[in-house]
Image 1: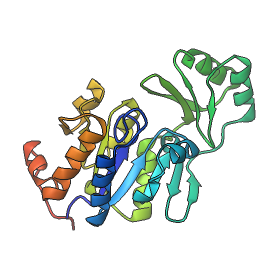
Image 2: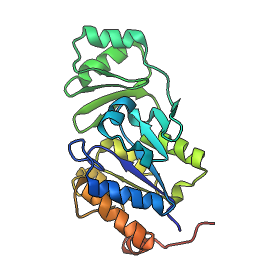
Image 3: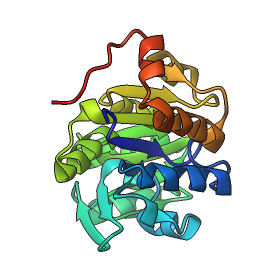
Image 4: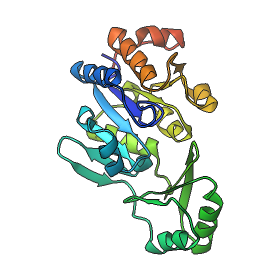
Length: 237
């Protein structure tokens, strides 16, 4: 078995309008039953994700806050991968009328068009922060924190290589983790820029696209897909 793990984005990938279908849940269960690991990677706050999707037990690790938090559903442990936002930063955004304003353990998030205000506040306070976009969402994180760095952290815990991972996503903030995966997949509803980067694009949207990918993964460990994109299949050492 070459592909030992499947890394999935949540909104727009696994979920359609925030909801994961029973068919997709069944497909995820079959991935786990095959002995492979599942890693969920999302920009959402952990608490928000737990309310929206109670089946986090399907995943070995959950990356939340766009790479700032690593959660283990088996024992409910949380590891922060970045420092908390400064209080003066939050206060300044509130005073400037940034709304909605989502405050996580590390991430600060809002919506377009507040990115100009956010960047101005970062500049005035002299903070070292990066602004990441995701289909209208504006996320602020410590420099160097993203979905890709969090995937690396999860793989270190699992003692897996990124060469044994297939990843699937749909939006701008998925570039960082998909670029690390041996096989990168975009669902049919993904942004054009992500489809250009991906090794393969599914025929179906959202969770149906993930299910389509899972069927191929379970059928032949993506050997057919690897051959289609010109990748030589090799056994892991």
